[in-house]
Amino acid sequence: MRRFIPLILLLFVVGCSKPPEPVSLEFRFAERRPAKNLTAMTIKGSEEIYYLRAQKLLTEKDVASATVRKEDAGNIVRIEFTSRGKLKYKNLTKRNIGRYIAIVVNGELISAQIIRGGISTGLAVIEGNLTSRQAKRIAKGLGSSIP
Image 1 (spheres, rainbow, N blue to C red):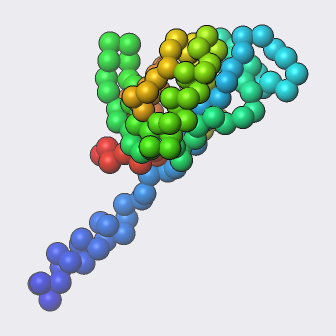
Image 2 (image 1 turned 180 degrees about the vertical axis):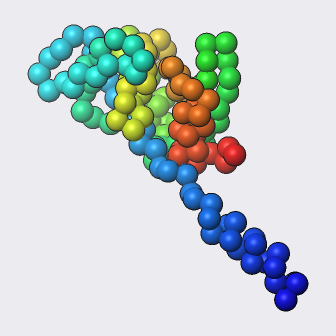
Image 3 (image 1 turned 90 degrees about the horizontal axis):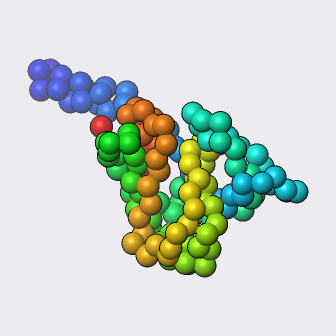
């Protein structure tokens, strides 16, 4: 019986650990002025309003991995795209210099930045007023192995 106690304990611990909650991630074009068929959203933690287009340019399905980093400006989530996502991101940034791209996580606008050049690295950063807990939850929900 003593041999089975560690096994039972292990099965209990594994059975009780919940998988991370999935995260909805969307990259969408945004505008600074309202127009027909655009959705107004405010950046979380600010009063900045952007008007988002409906088309999802990239989603969580285009993410290969995510990690959290603490920077001077706060917590960030660094994402690496799949090979398909990397190609999509490269093409959309290359062809849309000067336009705004918005990052929406779980239905909340986290940030909107001007595309300043083509990005071929396959990497992007989610930054905003993220607490350490929020950043870890986003990264875990995108498939990270962060504890």
